[in-house]
Length: 245
Image 1 (tube, one colour):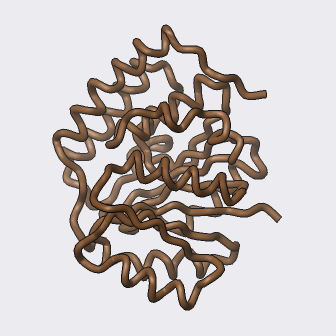
Image 2 (image 1 turned 180 degrees about the horizontal axis):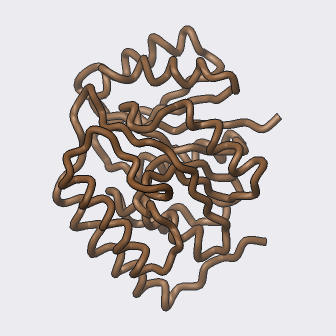
């Protein structure tokens, strides 16, 4: 039976963490969870440890010292997943902006429909974002259009952070060479998988802005993404990408 791991990075998510873990474990399909905990001062890690007593075979945690960035959290999670031989590896936020009930849809896109990477897409069937200020919706939507134009990927939601990877994608990509740490990390991973010849498929989801806790977005994240995309394109002219067998 295929093994499935959901990686959830956390920093100050005490309001959400227990509910999101229980929501994933209440799904009819079996998923494991790996929390990458970046030293939250609010006690997120203590809540996870308490829950590990209840879900000792399904819930795991890597604790890191301090806030080291979204990209490095996922890279640490990917390496852990490959070491523990999971077949399908998911990225998901802790704050319910990604609905856990969409996990099986992403899984089926890879396991049954031939995708190597399934992307939970906000924009593949219109603009499916709830409770975001219009300025942020427009910024996100046009950022995706900009990335698509510069990098030539036929993906509507290039900055999406809700994804399922087949393990062979993460084995093929040199994770130590992924250099972006903020939201440009999401673009870099998709672009690298695309350049390696993997099939990326978008699955429509509805993205709901967090109700509890605080957003980790900042202007620096967007400037990294804007300049990073140009850098990725230029670097790709001189880089040899390992190809999917």
